[in-house]
Length: 320
Ligand SMILES: [Ca+2]
Image 1 (cartoon, rainbow, N blue to C red):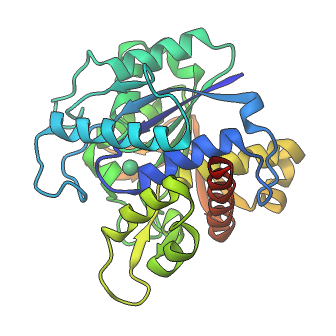
Image 2 (cartoon, rainbow, N blue to C red; image 1 turned 120 degrees about the vertical axis):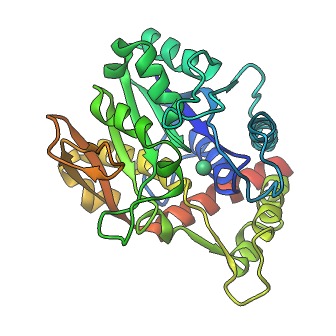
């Protein structure tokens, strides 16, 4: 059984809530769209860890980091509850500060949980990381021996062809990415622009596929409406489900043949040799031996369809 940890800053935006729900529902239901059967037979969620963040789009005036982390915990608890997952003893607070700023908390429950999982598993622990990558870097710094037992899928940076790579998750803690990229951990990066940015849910889509889809659907719909600008196609990029999708696409490929990844899983990945972060905070390559996997594209509409199908199944199950 492969252990999965999801590391989230759920109090920041709304996409983490979708990603957590997508992961929990994907452990429960087969995917008709992506041809992934029984993910829950081979994978289990073993912890939810909370990442630092410095401001919130949904708790607008809040700046206190400890309060922001409590907001994340509340959001995680709410989504787990609506998915029928008992989150008691599953949520672990992470660092409030960043390695970049020299303010990271070396002692934190999230990093300890990551270390514990990496050490106990026969197989690598998968970490779906959808915030600043601080907790994972801290775990590796604290016990470098665990790095080779980590398989990190991180939503962050932008494609290098985009005008800037300084995306929110990356720019909060660049040194953390440097530590993870240069470690022995497997690292798959799902860039925000222009990969996850295709995962756009407009109000019109929300009306059709979120609203009325059980309590979970209504909760996610309410979150979406926080970004309603009252215009046609107003909505939100649900970036973070891209990291869960990368795991599902990979599983779809594993079930067929890895060499057929692009054909069956509809996700294109390139290997970047020696990928890391320069002292000046820029993304560079050829700096060391390890390959990092960079997702350069996937069929976003398949991901959204898969998510909405699973949400529909869940709502029907809950209703009766
Ligand atoms: Ca996030």
